[in-house]
Image (cartoon, rainbow, N blue to C red; front, side):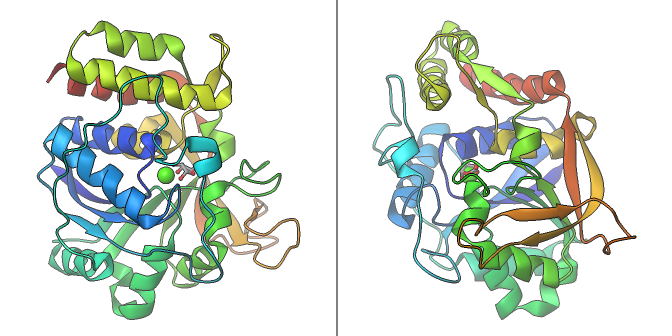
Length: 311
Ligand code: RIB
Ligand code: CA
């Protein structure tokens, strides 16, 4: 059984990624650390605890950073709705599980220390918690065997023309993670955009006919509607594509590159500048996703959601 830690700002695509890990044989979730991003931290906590109660999660959930290392929090609520869980119908029931602690950094540090070998962390939001861990416990950097991150872009942004949302919220944290030498595997927008989901995928979940299938179908359709309300709209699959890179390693290809986050640009703050010409132009400091096998990613993710809907 491979157990991994997930750091998340708990929007729907984060939820789908957590369910994909929890629903894939041979994989388990060791714990969640929550970070502000899609919504302010109280909303992220609410989404996580309502998900935990509804899906019966037994792993610990710890709240972490309420804002970025520098500046004010920018959220995606204007796109995702106040609860960052836009739905075409049903919403998570209000019943909540309980937070294990409000100190995600200490919890992640304890898990890393106890791990038998350098461990894998799946990061699905701004990297604030990870940067704070490295500031507080720099000796633990070698205990992270891989940091798989949905964030950044080797092409256009989504939150701004230049910046992907997770990177935009906290670009300083990206540079601190890179400076610590963490083995970052960056799954950016350009790769995630190769994997699409649409209303037919939501209909397939609802067709399972269970309460969970109906809810997941409505949440997935709410996510698809971000791209447009037209029935033919399709939406890029963000966080679950990063999860699939771990669950089905052949589904996403990576290339070594040099990455740095722009922190000062008036129009480019949060841009992840990817230099592919390594080592000639710069030393590689990350693996950057280049190609996704859309069918393999969709099969891994939607298959796990279907298993969850039937359980
Ligand atoms: O840009 C997409 C990323 O921003 C995803 O992680 C989504 O959940 C939001 O956090
Ligand atoms: Ca996210």
